[in-house]
Image 1 (cartoon, rainbow, N blue to C red):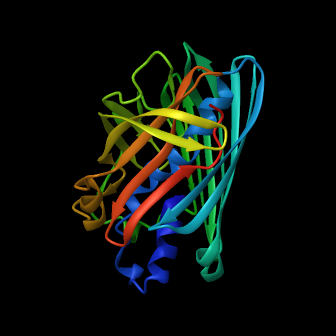
Image 2 (image 1 turned 30 degrees about the vertical axis):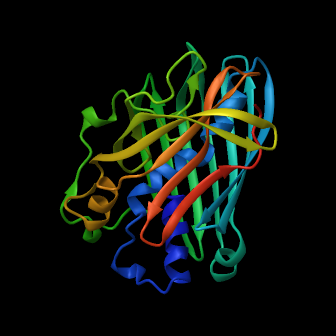
Length: 281
């Protein structure tokens, strides 16, 4: 997904042999989801709303990508679209562009996806993920181009039960203001892999950006793969054992929801961060 392409660019910047596998590939569903979470929550919970939120992604302070999110909500339906592109040195080396779209409904204050679409281009490489949901279950999933069977040795196949009671990477982290944003487990299907995201409360802190200044709730975050990946793959094991991932949630008093404004991921190449540069608090 998007972070797969971003980290490939990081490898090139640091003269790392990416052909042996990108250790941050498994974090893709985590990063990709967090890139769009805050904006989706802000827009979808208003009666009628159109909104925009901006983010920057950096590695050890070096800008790698920026994102612009546009969303609209009509009655009980929502649609969110994002445009993400590489910046700075990353853009000079190899251009990365991505488009995301989530469509769904609101039920009891929660986002319920009906379709999750994601396309990215890294240099000459293009990938597309298109997933449909119904009542919390995956009913269809398309990947283009189709993965080569030769690259799926020791692949842990996704079983039918893995595609039930799941959400997409957009709706995963949005929660009403009267709930706990550090809820214990989020079951996610990202179009290719089935995973659990485990959260735990870490206290509070202060956060300031355009449109918001105030207290945020801090959570630790762990990645647990379930299926849709290669067994014993070193990349998967690296991220599964990774400690120190942290996510911060801010409350939008206007729209009465919690949504992420900051993500920090320690890597062997430095700390990867996602920060909201504009947030409707």
